[in-house]
Length: 152
Image 1 (cartoon, one colour):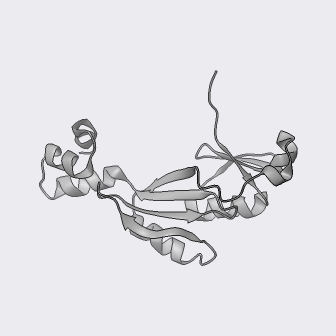
Image 2 (tube, rainbow, N blue to C red; image 1 turned 45 degrees about the horizontal axis):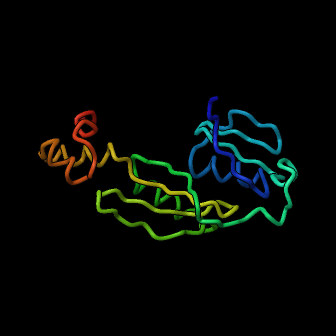
């Protein structure tokens, strides 16, 4: 058996397709009308209740029990892009975790949660460029030393 991809139930496939293209640079790799697969390895599906033969009232919006996770190399540039889309609702404003990663969480048009985090590779490289050892960086960013060494 092989896992293929996560699929998100959406109300309007065209609205969601535009959202993921504009904000995340996702390319459509397969468009079947009500089902669209993106280059990032996930799909969206309109009329999910019909497809799965379940009660439409049982399809929950804003469940807060999963998220899509994206990493960006230029977090500030993404925040600037996000500012240009006032229709996007934040789950929380940008924050910095103990492992030094800046993140923001937003909702897509169907209230699925999406986390956008600064690339951990970029963070490791930033500390290495300041002259810290791989061991010191690993401790700061709470990642294995092997990961930090690969970031050189």
